Image (cartoon, rainbow, N blue to C red; front, side):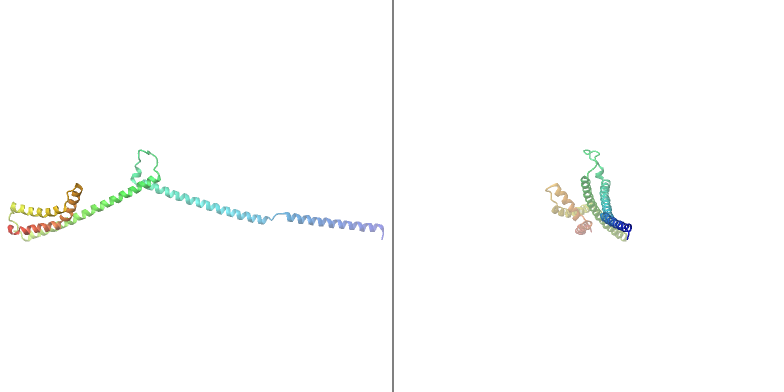
Length: 228
């Protein structure tokens, strides 16, 4: 072999070794660079989850705020309605002028007005009960008068004779004496209040149409013989 061929072979070997070392170094650098690059897919996933959580919290916060606002609006409307309905809430006190009524004042005025309505209702129920009693008494009197008229029509000549004033006075005296006995036993005159209460109680108990009719019948029965 010639010196020229040997030198060429040696140079070719050196070149191959240099290329191998360069390729090895390039691979090493590439692997190092690849290992130093962060995992972008995991970071994107974490970011999306955080965004979803923040959006959910924001929606809940908005929903809670809207619900709270609706509740406050409903309460305010309720107080406004009370001020419109309750007459005493519309009557401004001179001491506060045109100042808006507080919620406590509105509630107290509403309670007072409800209690007033309950008293008025009870008073009206008592008046209705009294009127019903009067209507019942008038019906009884109407029935009695109808019976008297019917009896007179059946016997037109009965009762044509005039009754003397003495007989009339005797009938009146007998009725009054009977009523005075119950009156004297029921009435107390210790005070005006007791007197008023006892008088009303006595009238309700002893001056009913049925009771008065029984009294008159008793008196007429006692005076029957002198009359006839």
